[in-house]
Image 1 (cartoon, rainbow, N blue to C red):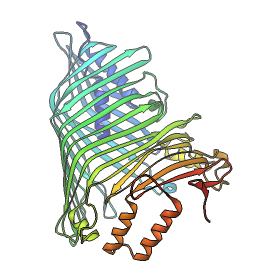
Image 2 (image 1 turned 180 degrees about the horizontal axis):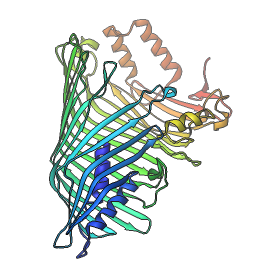
Image 3 (image 1 turned 180 degrees about the vertical axis):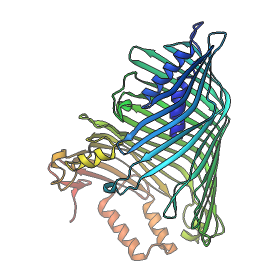
Image 4 (image 1 turned 90 degrees about the vertical axis):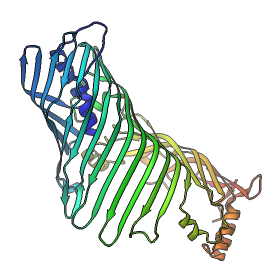
Length: 504
C-alpha cells in the first residue's frame, strides 16, 4: 500500500478544510497539491489546466518519482483532478477515472537482477472539501471507497508479482497542510470501515492464494519537512521528520499454497494490531504490535489432520539509520512473543509421557546501540560501490537490555553491554569487541535436561555432558535449580566467566 499512501499524501494537499472564515481558490489548492507532491519526492505535471467558470480541471496529470535508488523509478497518470469553487469559499475536489502507476526496476547483472515493471491502478470515489487559506489548509475527506489493483507477473513459472485487489470501504477523515516559510507540516487522521485484500499468485505448477480483511482500519500521521528538499532521489527523506501509525481492528487471513500433490491451507485471526513508522534525522523506526492471534494449518502438505497454535501478544521494533552520516546513529531491535501456545500435536511428539510443563512459551529480546553508516541503505549502487572501500556499516557499542526465554518450565534471562573495536582495526582483530560484559541466569535448567533425557529426546550421555558444561560455566544462585554466569572481556583481551579464565 506504499503507493496508495503516497498518492493520498499528495492529493491530500488537494483536500484542505478549515482556517476560520478564510477562502481558498482552486488555483491555490492545485499549487499546494504540487508542493505536497514535491515534498513526497514526486513531480506532478498537468498536460492542460482548464478553467471553466468556477472549476479548474487538471488533465492528464503525469506523476514521476525517481524512486529510492538509481535503479528504480515510478511514474503514473491521473486522468483528471477536478477542483470546483463552492459558494462558501471552499473547494470541492474529485478524481474521476482510474489512476495508473508503473514501477520500473532496471536489470543489473552485477546485482543478479532482471528488469521488472509493476503496473497498478487505483480508483477513488471520495469527494474532498478543501477550506482555509493557501498556507493553512484543511481537507475533509467525505465517505467513499478506494480500490487498488496490481497486475500479475510470471517469470520462469514463478509469480514474482501476484495479482492483487485491495479495497477500502467507508474511507473518511481529515488532513491538514500548513506552510510557514520553508517549513511544511502535514497531519492525517483517516479511517476506513474495512480493508480487504485478495491476492492470486497461482501458476500452472503452484497454487498461491492469499486474502485478508481488517475492520476497522485507521491512519494517523504528523510530519514536518522542507518546501525545498534536496534535488536527489532520497532528498525528500533527508528533510522528513515525523510519525505515522496504522491501527487495525479484527484481522482475518487465509493462505492456500502448494502443488496438486501437497497443499497447505492456513487460516488465522488477530484481535487487534498496530504498525507505526517514525523518521528522525535520517533514521527510521518500524514498530508493530498484535494481540490474541490464532492460526490453524491443515492440508496434505502436513503429516497431521490439523495443527493450531496461538499467541497472546507480539511486539516488534526496529530502529536503523538509512542515510549515510559522519556521526553515530542509534540502532535497536526489540522483539517480544508473549505466551506462545504450541499445538497439542507438538507436545505429543516432544513429550508423549506428559512429563514437561506445557505452559505457553515467551521470548523477549531488546538490544540497542550506536553505529556508523557509510552508505545510503536505500541505494544499491551506493552500497556496492562504497563497500569496496570498507564496511558499509559498523556498530560502535551494543547494549543487551533484556533477554528472556521461558519454555517447558525453564527460564533464561540476561543483560550485558559491549564496545566494538575501531572500524580500522576490525579486520585484524581476534574479537570484534574492545570490552564486553554479560550476566546470564538459568532457572529450571537441570529439571528440563532430566525431563528431556527421560522422554528419550536427549540421550543420557548428552544430558550428562550438558550438566557438566553447566557446572563449568555457571555457579549456583539463590533458589533451587538456579544458576548464573558473569562473563567479562576486559581491555587486555582476557575473557573470564565468574571471575575465572576459560578452562581451555
